[in-house]
Image (cartoon, rainbow, N blue to C red; front, side):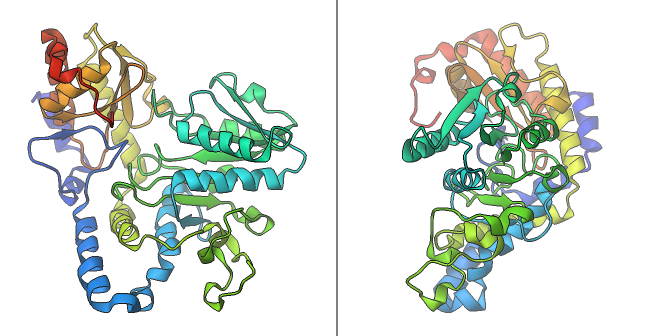
Length: 407
């Protein structure tokens, strides 16, 4: 470890939070932008939920342990991370399902407009859900228009109902200008939907201040809620009672335990709940979120920028890698991405050496830095191991060329 890395770690105001996570010894984990590490509190919460609440109190727990309130309870814990006041975030379902709800809601709020504008390389599930809505409604009622990040605003016009974009691009880690794009959408009378899956928990957000209409995000990346953790929906208060969503689920009813045969939407953001909450998963996410009550997101963002810059600097004279993430720290999320024609094999060779990153087609090595548990020394060592693998061409070994199902 260099003296510079040692100094950076010694002066890191977030260093103590690493002890809140259950990390395998000796492993450098640079994939928190896909799946956050396990918080010890989440492990304890799952044990408590399974053994005592479910195991001992059984169905009484819906009342005695307030399982029924979990979508709201967890949503309110997420809200401050989004820059949202109370009563606008609900935790429910998956990001994909929530996107469907919000895309259709936006089209309902803008009758006569049919365009959904997005980035051509937006995260696939966002595009897939929009494509599904177009297929379902027909081309005369919905149309998906995609463009490059640079040309997207030029495609927003008076026929646009919704602009839909992921705040941090999952491939190159570029942070989009939320204020500028939201304003551009509103100037044309369109609604704005942000997918925050790759930014919430790694940087401050200001949905209310910017007047954002809708947002979604998952709970398993920088929020550390566990594999398949529930997602969330943000609906600006000014829109909540003007719109319904098409998935009329029991839990989104105004009085679910009246068991009416006719659907009546709940007030406010609760109407965006569909099915029964996954209690064990919700409890894990809820416990993971508790640590954010003592965390300054400005410090998280500052470390993210410094940490990713340190990693890039450690690889500055490595000619085999082409950096595709923005070089300016303020323009990238908490990840660093490179092009290399043997990207998949390199990631596999790194994993064998004790460094977990990930790969995205067609040739992208992607490294996610979670400021709460990643150290500067780890970033430096990961860069050194990556350099060694490239120099020795270890990645050419047959074992690293075999594609696994999950890349």
